[in-house]
Image 1 (tube, rainbow, N blue to C red):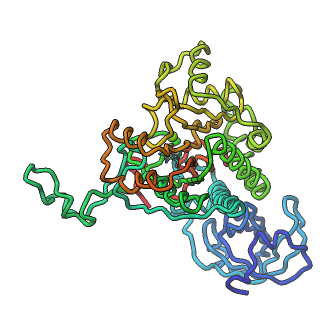
Image 2 (image 1 turned 45 degrees about the horizontal axis):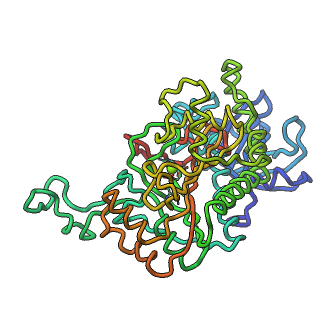
Image 3 (image 1 turned 180 degrees about the vertical axis):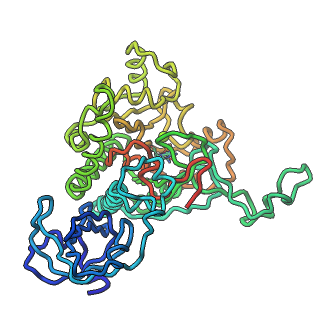
Length: 478
Ligand code: 4AD
Ligand code: MG
């Protein structure tokens, strides 16, 4: 059978063995054996488990057997039988074997020994062939699917926000410029500054940092919408939680206030984690075991307090703690802990502060609200006190901020004044301001960093290991 009708290894591993003749194709993970038999593990990416092929050496030529090596692609035809060995229910007794593409064992970098994650990043074109990255990619897929399912089942519309933009949604100035001008010799204005009116779009253009502003336009017509697309940040953060290109999910809802927004964020995250627990059990079990092995080298106090699946269940089963930024700051001040960045009201919380609240103080996910307006974006709804805004950040163990969102300022006057106070170019936002002049309503939304979610669910420790091809400062291979 070919094409879509072809059964995958995942299917055969769940089939009752009745000596039926089948063919499978995949990549050889390992080959071992004795004088009479070769045991070849093949994997086609449909599951973490490989199918064991048993080949009697006298049925096959030495030349063929020599080319069956870790990394080669192979097609095997034979009988599916109940396995003699432990560890698998079925195995394939080979009758015909064909090596489709050889892999020179002297050169193929993924030999059986354990490889560091750093090394695997250097061979990101091959790392999907490892158990770890196969599991991560399948979980990443499942989560993306679950996101669309969650919103579709709740009557949200998927809108596609543009990637090329003339505005800075977050106002943080961390954008990648897009230009077709000759960098060596750009057209210049009289004052010698670059004349972007001669550029492709007739003005300065960038890759978007967020689809939110366009999502708001759609929510103010369709009521409940979400975006799910790539976003770009040119911040020079070489951390285990930042990427220059990452995917963001941004729901935006008319008639929602901050409490509705928090309820949605909590329900959404719990749904996604539950979905992974129910649909990715084999891959999670593999990653959990992997984490235990990795951590067995560490001192007891450095190991995770909970196993991966216990940690995921813990989030699903507990209510998130909700409190204001102001209360959080006083908890941090009273903690007596020496932070690298000292705490006082008004500072932007660092990951060490967020993790203290989540991991040490409350021991569960936390939603902080009502941040000082100076450290948040211009579009957030202003509180009556004139000092804070109706922001919310959801903080997770091991991750820190996983979601950032807010109720939006729906008053034209207040929004307009804030834009001027911050010195933002009104010309690039006239359309956004008009929504507050024509039928404005209370509305709210948030952004979930997709890779931070995948990081949490897989229990990996570096965000570069949960996206197929990470983009970070000085890193644009593949
Ligand atoms: O908090 P942020 O900057 O919020 C926004 O962009 C809003 N427009 C969202 C909204 O209200 N619609 O980013 C949202 C989330 C963060 O909480 C984090 O999970 C993720 O995006 N994020 C990153 N993930 C990976 N690498 C980076 N450099 C990230 N920056 C933000
Ligand atoms: Mg944020």
